Image (cartoon, rainbow over all chains, first blue to last red; front, top):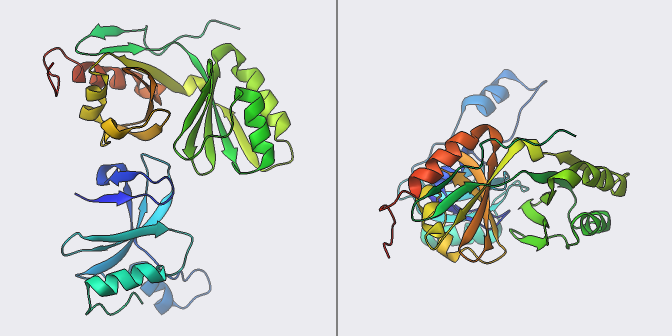
Length: 107
Length: 186
């Protein structure tokens, strides 16, 4: 069972209060893009064993989307941060690097 | 205006806490930039309170303003004055990007009273109810229904849920308060 802190309302929310939104930091390829780019955007997911960045929505709370970094193998939560960003915050990346020295970075 | 009808007829049951359907209450959703002067002024005029801080509810007599999300407030007023309050809010916020909607008829209000009131919510919501501060409103779920609740008095919680789920919410609250099922028996 996950508990994530919603950065919008500060509630330590139980997983059952949240709605999962899949992988975070996807670059969208919309109309006019090549078939390969669209195919990659639509279907290709990293699905890593280890550090993973995810979108979550505080569905039974403030209703806002936020992002979370956690480990898919141990369920360790590294942190949550607001969704209005295109990259994980530097201090969160440093924290993950300290906990998982062999982590290759988020890109 | 015709008499407002409650979703359930004020059911109240005696368990280790008393659960009752509360009377009709005027509820208004207000969305907009909560930090703006226009919203602060409009809320002051509507409820007599300031714009509440994050997860807070500020009450002034029968009126209150509750923080629902970073851009949303719930304004509580007596049922008869809801329409007039909506009109006043809309006039006060004209020109600013906002939304004001009367949701009184879409909501059902319950009160849970008694020394065991806390335990009823502990059973139903994934919330650390014991640490819920005075004047704090918590949006969560009660079993499968979205809800919001706060401490409205000593040993009393007020819970707001969707009216369409009033029957279900009453049933789970009633069940959670059944005699002999307290989490911490006295």
